[in-house]
Image (tube, rainbow, N blue to C red; front, side, top):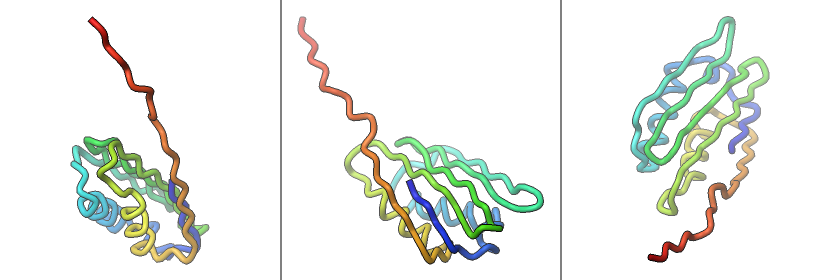
Length: 114
């Protein structure tokens, strides 16, 4: 989970910029992009999601507060989601970045006997 504060309002309100930044971060991370959808609200704000084979990236922005909330959800041990988080934070011009990593989906091993 990523919270970006004191971002550049113009960037947080630019759906094209956000789409490009998020897709570039996903590709740089090496995940498989399946589809994406982004929406610009009136008078301000953007929401978007990128579906990836390994789960999803999502964002919602509040330009009037210089704030964006994101989830970078990946499966598997071969990805470093914090790398994508830092990439996005840098491109959004965040002065304060909070990254919270939550280990989810840790299922116990299933033993099948026949």
